[in-house]
Length: 372
Image 1: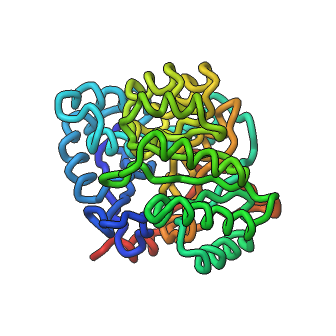
Image 2: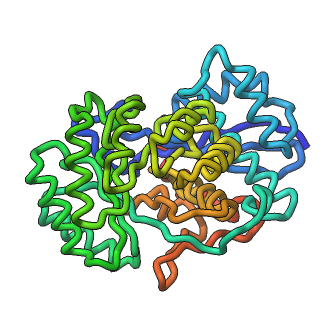
């Protein structure tokens, strides 16, 4: 079975506010789906955390390497794309596009084999996992309302991040965290994302350490991206000194980029994004490297439903997994599947067991978000 085409599905009109105070380029074109088409009929779908115009360009650029390739060898084909585009990519947009193709190939492989992707990744260690609702900080009154709505939906873990945390004052940061903890109570896991990958991040090691001490007083589960994402040395210092776990890694691509962060002890929790770092093939390698070094792995997923499904299968195939990220509210998660992903009564997500990623796209919704 051969690859004959890769279609790109734009996602426009439902993009969630990312919290960037000065915006980002583009504002409403941050995700795209890729669909691998074969000469024998079956297709596989993947998700890319990159604008559709860049995805379209990347798919066209890589065409000589994927066209006519095997549709049932995801790791080899993805590595071929990576190696043959080395001088044009070595991370960045090209790697993002390879990520989506890789996820789509795993979906296709599972459908052809009649097996869920989790089993093909090595076996299922769990049948369900806790999602954390991923949302932005806001002023205290609105924050309280948003948190109450999320808890009412059944979430038992919540991550709050970005605007206005770290942008006003230490007093205001603590007010936001105290408001969150008082609103959700002690039984809901709370995580905090400073958003250090924001443009021109102003804070350094001492701010991050003092903030980590404040977060510990409110039993925050981890402190994510407290420093600029390339500041390896200060991440190492911070992890050693901070009273809460330190998380990061969402902007890194390729397994090689993660090696120093894991081997040098820069993170308690490493967070590669399968829709950017190289797909399920690369994320699995990173996850096992982390496991062998006593570092926890939680996929980053500012995502689509296809990306969440990929994260669920990856989490199922790892011996230690705590959460998957679940952006909420998010049209690209809630609306683009025939059977949307739903929490059970205990606030858990069930790992799909149907072949491939175990999902079916809502083609009407894709047309609605095609931006045409």
